[in-house]
Length: 196
Image 1 (cartoon, rainbow, N blue to C red):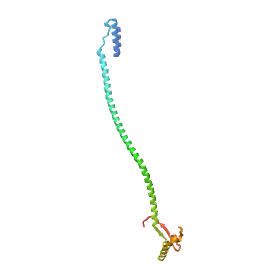
Image 2: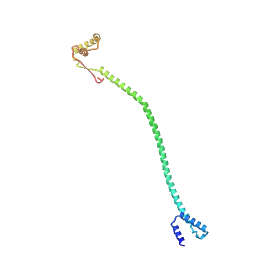
Image 3: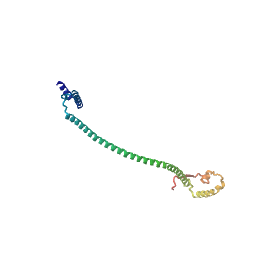
């Protein structure tokens, strides 16, 4: 009898798997000796209840895990959709950038031609401004008396006609440049603007 109590105490502290092993050992021992009284009484409902509890716990873990997994999968789907949308936007932006670069490369030649044309027109403008300033002269130290003015004008008109005949080269003296018969200096200054 003490051996049975020791077996019962060890069974109380053992797991269900160990209990099944003990039962199978007891059954094999009983079968080999032919004594059916040595087989201990095993409560099958306790093992099933214990297995059912474990199964329920595992089922709860699985449900909790599947719920959390559904949330994670939904979040992954949202991220995939956002990445796909972002990829589409990036492709569109790349196409627009490529189009702008192509247009810019095509416009470089036009820009260079326009820069050359502006430089040419600027030179022409400067030349025309200088020409207009040369045509618009302001006379300083003009003769004040009428007689002197008339004498100067008559000399000037005569000197222009005879100038080509007298000079084979383009060299004018100070007297001829200013047009004064008595050698007075007549200063000719170009005006800054074309307005009077």
